[in-house]
Every structure is written in structure tokens, then in C-alpha cells.
Length: 112
Image (cartoon, rainbow, N blue to C red):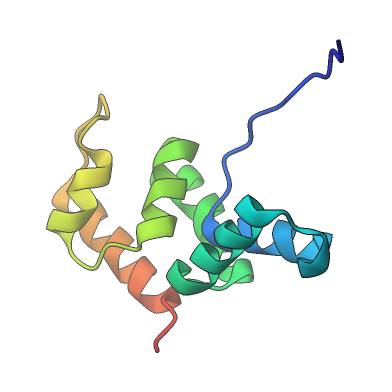
């Protein structure tokens, strides 16, 4: 039996897209191709912006990395939508901070 050590890493959709594209579409299995198709359809931010957002949300707004990734993947458009992703947290975030997060997301959103 193979004893490989596996690591779990939280990735935003644009980061998943980069990983799958680096493998090459011709080398992807069926599940990976479906994942790439999903990521292409539902990514709402570019790779560089997602990295910047992740750092800023974790550092400046004191979000957990998993919360920040969920926020980046869905890119909520209002404070009410944003609260859904932060409801399970142990901390209460001020409305001004939530407004700032939504404004930051809006600055980095891909417009279609």
C-alpha cells in the first residue's frame, strides 16, 4: 500500500483554475475537466486579484483563511450576503468593516 502524505490547501476558484490549466487540458481526467469547466463559469475574480483579496481579508479584516476563500469564491454583493459567510464565526464584525469588505470585493469583481 502506498503511504503518501496528503495536504489540504484552501484555494480560491482562480487558483484552482491555474492549477488545472498547468496540468494541461489533454492530461485531465473527466472529474478534473468538469472542475475546470465549473471554475471557468463561476470565477468572479482574476487570479492576481484573488491573491491580493485573500491576503487583505485575512490580514486587514481578520477573517479566517477558509472564510476569506469562501467570500472570494462567491463574491457577495451586499452586507446581507456577506453575513452568510461570516455567520459561523465566533466574532462580531462591525457594519463599517462589512461595508469596507463589500466595497473591496466590488473593486475587484470581473464584470461580464
